[in-house]
Image (tube, rainbow, N blue to C red; front, side, top):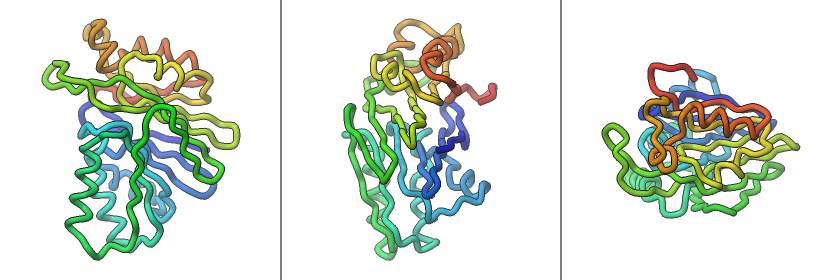
Length: 229
């Protein structure tokens, strides 16, 4: 199982691609996902599942375009879309697509998941962990908790963990611990990292590095736009 960041910038877009011998799996689908996949010359017929960590726009903004492309290429096989239970933003995008077209040839199979669930796709196992992530506007003005999960992919003994956006929580520790590769939210600069924000919104780069030591290798994601992935 291989993995790579297609794009990841806080507040802009985040999408990560995983692959096995047979299939591709997409984790989050921010704006530009379709462009990113086309640039890699991905076989869209082999995308087996889309796993969404939460419903914020920079993680789902490219979903409608991706479904539209699957319609244009006349995909026949169903596409499975996994998202946190109660995530209304994802549900509404899928409903809007289905109500806009009656001529697409593939089935959209939705799966609402929650912490403790396990998804099995042939020889791939995906474990779901609860993350803690609040909605926010402006300069980290915290509003209310939103449903958010992280995914732990296990294939032929290799483990890849992807946190999505999260503050410090027990689910994050369990998600990352022992993984071969862990993609961890690293949004905050140190001067932004108050206890309230670290616990409820995002991790700082320092905190992500600290938690990343629980894995064999960690990769920072969701950096601010003046930094590298």
